[in-house]
Image 1 (cartoon, rainbow, N blue to C red):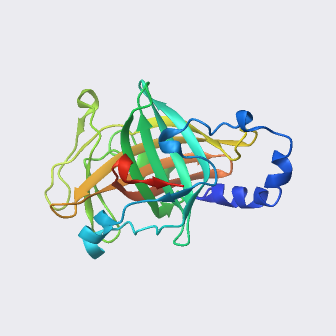
Image 2: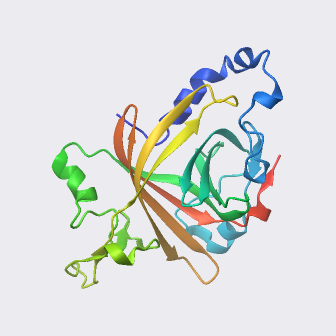
Image 3: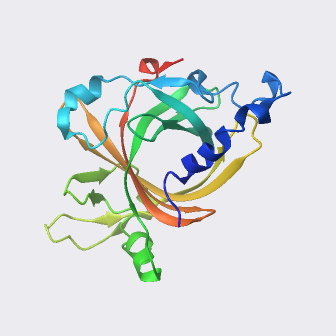
Length: 245
């Protein structure tokens, strides 16, 4: 059975032999020498706390603290840009920092996400609830969490809109297909251990208050040990506000 953060288990299993495996390899062999913001394996990452303070208890995502470290990273193409996902470990729990950079490596987007929920559909009917072409939940114009926090779809595709009947509250619904991409995750600084994960994803957002917005990313995820529907919540960060040590 797949799990959002099974990747951390795999990383933990290889940490004992990390230094033995790197013996004799040079810095020039590393694959993390030229990543956005100077991020690299085992570096410390400190996110600004200001948005978490301004939003108070209304945010679903929690502040990760100042002791986050990069334990792996993945990447996939987004048009002419490249999306990088840095998987962080901290005393609070796992997080994911997603950075999108253009062809000149200028950062276009920077969001910090935290795991929020996960579902394991057991049969085709259960998967259809999430991914059916006509009315699958991933891609609807609104998304409600289990605690009735409502998010609105951020990504749009005017050429693929399918208009649906209003929901029980009378809200008008439409759907577009989720975005599909394949992420290659690197589990060590030399690119010798990797994991490939396929996603069908949609991004949603809400205004928490006049100062802070929150995002929700929901994905149908297919990886080597199974499939699940994974939900993350996050906030946008200014790249210059992130401290990398």
